[in-house]
Amino acid sequence: MSQRPLRQVYTIIRTGINSKGNCYSIRAYGSYSSYRTAYYYRNRDGSFYYANTDGSTYWNDGKGKSRFIRLNKTFTAT
Image 1 (tube, one colour):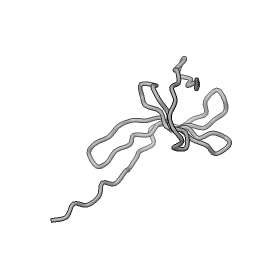
Image 2 (cartoon, rainbow, N blue to C red):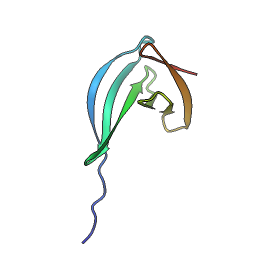
Image 3 (tube, rainbow, N blue to C red):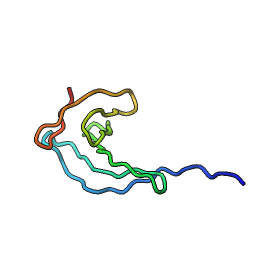
Image 4 (tube, rainbow, N blue to C red):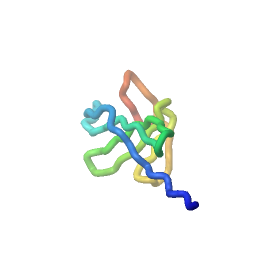
């Protein structure tokens, strides 16, 4: 019996525009029954990053990660 590969799926919870004019969406990611929530931001220049719900790290186009802080529901890269 062969195992089928896990499929990465997501559901968009909410979308909007942050204080810098960048689009973002909050997405629940998961493979079948295992889900986690992450913030997905797409900037005007086409770059994007993912953030953990605790606000600890983000990934920008897969080029690494960096810390950022959360201020009044506004995410600011540091």
